[in-house]
Length: 334
Image (cartoon, rainbow, N blue to C red):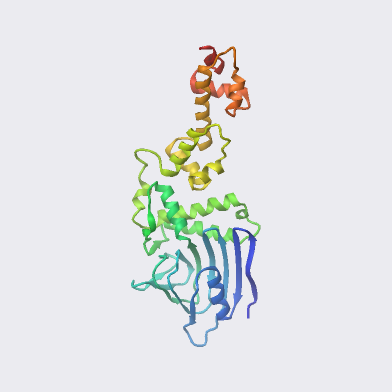
């Protein structure tokens, strides 16, 4: 019988929680099916009793969990339909997918699963507590496309193991530990949607940097010959409608990436934030309008307000810093 169960708990529209402590095999199987994948689950050792302890949560395109079975079990799955990583905190997890040989995940080596391929956890030992993360394929592919500016398509395959003892893999494992802990805390900072989105993006970026795949080198190459596609979409939109009252969130939605990614993409490729770039484009339009205007028929204030600059003193300072003269001097120069 379950000692505690919350099956499932919705705390906000993008967040679903399930916690379970049970000795019932069918109940444990149903919980894993509800949050991760349908499975056939068997005890491997006669006389052992299940002592499952599951904490799982769905955050947008990610499902996170900390899971322990408390007995030696085997689980069998069809195609997962998602990328998946298992990071044992203790014990060992023997697994295989499709035609590959049996691999062993441990606290030093994570198991990395593809969306396709019949999957078997040959032995999840009774000492093994696992941090698990399920990633919707389109979310990971789209994130990779945003980072590289290249089309990826459905062919992304991740290496089946990740070294957790050093380098990016160790950092990613620590990040996963932090995110799982915070996800299970109903009073934690991940209740804030903006922070939750940033942490999800960090997990996706970290996974792509910590595992081998065909696009790994592209992540390290500086962008050549122009902007990555999301940045270019925003640059084009700003030049087409600089008068529009854009926000960072609106620009990120237009680009198809997170606000955090857009800020970092602009910093690396443009050298400023999206809103600073927008301000500079508007400043250029102000200068062009002042240079062509009749000083007897218009004022600096009228032009500045029309382009969204509400504080004339600060506007004049930034204008002079950018163009080497006051806006009134540009207007009189005609």
